[in-house]
Each structure stands twice: as structure tokens, then as C-alpha cells.
Length: 517
Ligand code: NAD
Image (tube, rainbow, N blue to C red; front, side):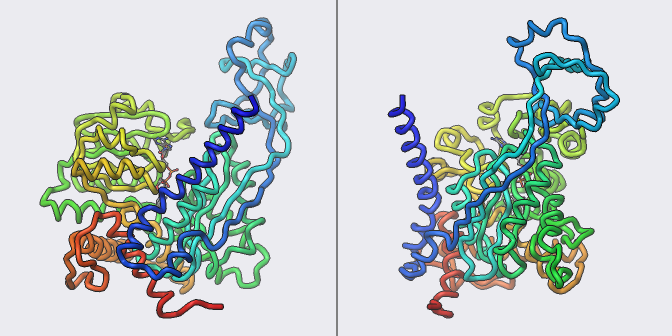
């Protein structure tokens, strides 16, 4: 028994190591292509710092639904009269938080730790108390500017994942040509199992512990999976509390609400940037986006915004898959109605497309096999593996998520002639507008939305054009861009081309500034 466990552990560790190694494959391939300075390669192939720490939280008591097989002894249990609205707070995983203050006027019957809530059934009371969570912040590289990258709360978060995502940020900030480096971090937690208040306390604790390593000129977090503008607001407050210079330091986080120093256009910037890339891809292919059929995975910040901009251009969103279901409508899904269902419906605790009345439910397998023009993965990494890639019937994969395609998936897509717009350019709109937000904070300015969007469009389209030229081996200078310093002597695939641009921009700093001792 023990031997099996150890074997499993070794296998898991090996798989994790291979995951990071796989993610760095494109880096090494592009480094060979540009003959990257050997010392620069060493500087970049591992992070500057790997911070691993723990955050604690006082968890409230919970009511957990009683499994059907444990119900019989409680068949005669009298119902307790609890005002559900006040006493019970529903969690996205089907459990309830028990607020003791609301029980004061209630008439409760508890037997062996079980109580019956009218019209909801039997629940076991599970005692709360202090809990410990593993937290991370990986600071990959800062040669071009302060560390920059999102904060993710996820049950599968790991050192390996954050190392991979932090390195991606270094490449992305270089491609976007913003003066930042790369970082990523977060907490290993299933946020569905915790209340908003508990998540807030954990976020505050994260900053309390990490404060010495953050700052507008040091390391600047932003939202990522399961974090948002609300969390950024309280993280900023926690950081600024007690600082003499606090009004000058709002740039310590980006992705804030526009009313407290956020930038117009930031909320939708990643989806907007992705659509700017798709416009350029479609122009290059001579295909109109009007009428194009789109498959979308993920309907969170990135996915919902991409859907909105694509449908405004006349594209048809024919199916959307997320963590809890998939919906399909051949005539095209009404994006505004889906947004209402997912993001403005207080009862939809899991913020899922499942149950959307305006489309039919299908399986995830069916989703990958639908015929369409464009696939936008905007959920998690590793979704498009060799098998999925084998069955896709689209012309282009525009990577909204970070690392959605595995190495094998990439190989199959190339073999089948399906284009890829790589994540490090396709989803760079978010960090680009984060830079504008940081700049506005430093200058104490507030730019109009049109100004932000115009700057973003110019930035994304010129960097996209440079990458396209590198891929095609066609150096040129236009009014919008100059790809001559970056092109190689022969064409390369789009992913390598994007990495070539990143590495040449990063390497210049080491070559011109030298290495500090
Ligand atoms: P989000 O938390 O707002 O949304 C995530 C979406 O993915 C949800 O719809 C969720 O249901 C879905 N999802 C989760 N697990 C899934 C699974 N196993 N199968 C199918 N769907 C699943 O997150 P977000 O901010 O929109 O980020 C999405 C992706 O984009 C991530 O990879 C993130 O790193 C990347 N990204 C985000 C930004 C940004 O500005 N928010 C910027 C660059 C890249």
C-alpha cells in the first residue's frame, strides 16, 4: 500500500516537473533561433524568486447537505424554523454558512448534529475554526520593469503552475512593450466552498504577509481566475493602510474599479485585445468576421468580453462551454442575455452558462467537434490536447486563456493547418491597459475610455504585425510598425515568432545594461 502511494507521489512530482519543462519548450526553441546570449538564457530559464507562504483563516460553521444514505434515522426530525435569508448564506458548492446571530430568534431542533431546513432538506452542522492555505508569488524576471502579474485562487494552484504563468508574464509584458517584468501568484483554495467574506479575509491576509515584496515599483498584482476588481480594492487598501505616501501608491495593484483609480476599459481589455488580434488575422486571411461562427470556452472576464466584442462585429457565438456545462445555438447565442444569466443573476452562484434558457445543453465532447471558424479558449490551461486538436473543425484558435494548448495539441494543430494566435499576444490587452492604469495612477490622471481603447488598438495591432512578419520572415517598416530588427532569415510558426519578439526585447536590456554584480 505504502509503495503504491510513494510511486504515485513520484509520478505526480515527475508530471509536475514535466509540465514546467513543457511550458518552457517554446522558450528554448526561440532562444536557439535567436542565438540568445547563454547567460541571458540562464537568467530566464528559472524565476528570480519563488515565494511560498501560508495564510490562515477563521472559517465559519457550515451546513453540509446530508447524503441520501444517511437520511433514514432523521426521517422524523422536526423542521427547524430558521429564516434562511438571514441565517443561511448559500455557497456555490451547495453548502450553507451558518450565521449564529441570525439563529437568536429561531426555533431549532438538532439531533446528532443534524437539522432539517424547511423546503431544503437535512443538513449536518460542520464546525468551523482556523484553517491554513498554501500561498504563492513567483517573481520571474524584472529586467524590463517591476514584476507584474495576476493573482489566482484555484484548487489546482501549484508552484509549477505559477512558475509557468509567471514566465508567461515576462514574455507577455515584453511583447506588449510595457515596462514591466513577469510574476504570478495566488492561493491554493476552492473558492466555491467559501463565502465572500472568508475570501476577503484571505485576500487581506495574503497582502499582510506579502507586503514587503510588493509595491508600485516592485511587484504589481492584478485579477486572474477567481479574483476581480473587488479583491484588488481591498488588497490595495491593505497595502496602503498606514503608509504616509499612500495616495501616490495606488499603482500597487491594477484591475481596480474605475471609481477608485482603475482605468476605463480595463475590465474588458483582455477580451478587446483578443478581438483586435482576430480582426488582423481575418484581414490577413481575407475573411470577414461578420457572420463568422465562434466557439467559446470560458464565460468569465475574458470570455464574456470577447463574446460581446465579437458579436458587435457581427460574428455568431454558436456555443459556450464553462466549468459546469455547455450551451449551443446554431443560430447564435444572444450574448447580452447570456451575460445577464451568468453575471447579473444573484441566484447563479457558480456564474455558469448551464441552465441558460436561450440555448440547448450539449456535452463538452460535442462542443469540441462543432464546426465553426474561430475557437476562443478563455478558461484554463491545457484544455486543447492532442485528442481535442485532432477533432477540432475550426480555422483558428485565438488563445484568450494562458497556455490552453499542450505541446502535443500544438503539433496536431500545425499538422492540420489550423492557425494559432498565441496567448502571449492574444491576451496581452489586459496587461497593456494595466500599464495605462498604472501610468494614470502615477500621474494622478484619468483618461477617457476612447483614449484607452485607441491606444490599446494601436499597441496590439502593431505588435501583432511584428509577430506576423517574424512568422512569415518578411521584415518591413510601415507607418504602424517596424519588424526589421526582429525578423529571422526564415519563416517560423506563430508561437515561436511571438517568443522571438519577447526574447529580443528582453535580451537588449542585458546586452546594453550588462549584469550587476
Ligand atoms: P474567470 O474566473 O473570470 O473565468 C474563468 C472561466 O473559465 C469561467 O467561465 C469558468 O467557468 C471557466 N472554467 C473554469 N474551469 C473550466 C473547465 N475545466 N472547463 C471549462 N471552463 C472552465 O477568469 P478570467 O479572468 O476570464 O481568465 C480566463 C483565462 O484568461 C485564464 O487562463 C487567465 O489566466 C487568462 N487571462 C486573464 C486575463 C484577465 O485580464 N482577466 C488576462 C490575461 C489572461
